[in-house]
Amino acid sequence: MPQNFSFSQPVERLVHGDDVHPNHVGQLFIATMIGHVFDKGALLHKIYDWENYNVGYQMANAASDHIPVCFDNLNCTLDEEARNPSCLKVIDKTGFQLRSLPNGKMWWEGTAPGHHIEFILRRKCSKIVLFINHRPTNGMVKVKIDGKLANSTLPEGKLDFYSKQLWWIPRSRGHLREAVIASNLERKQHTVRLEVQNETRSEDGTFKVDFTGVSCL
Image (cartoon, rainbow, N blue to C red; front, side):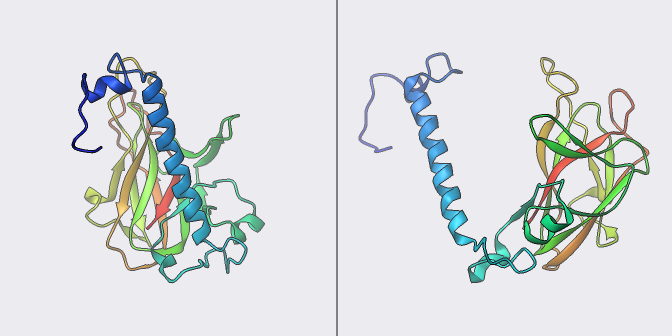
């Protein structure tokens, strides 16, 4: 905003009148910002050569190895796995189940100690981010990367899915969070294993954990 602008009222009052809900100017501002995000997405889409993937991951420019890839397509067929860069390739699972809602939302869920899931990230990366749901009734997992405990990003390789809930929000509602589970890795394809632990801070003593995707950077 230009420095020489002056207003008869604080700038905050121009976009909303009650400190919470946007007025018509605030709605226009939000719409403009959303449009900006879509413009960025369209520009990023042009960077990729979607028609000429080789094993799903050949990019159109030399810097493609450093572009983050999000594996959030959890229900791929074998044919889709070969050509869709967002497919998460699960290679082993015991106890973990793929859950879904009518609106299309999907997640992997483990509910008891010993339940585990292992998947391979078919993209060279040095940092791995897991998208998890936090709840006051969730447990924790031990994370292994390529068969070894995750580095110092996670104390003892453990990732806690517990989070204290705000009193007015239903206890069952999860809050999607990004959790860095490994960093400073050798830039190559990695295998991730999550195993539900026999310990929990859950308010009701349950061990459930769930995640919606993983990002490779």
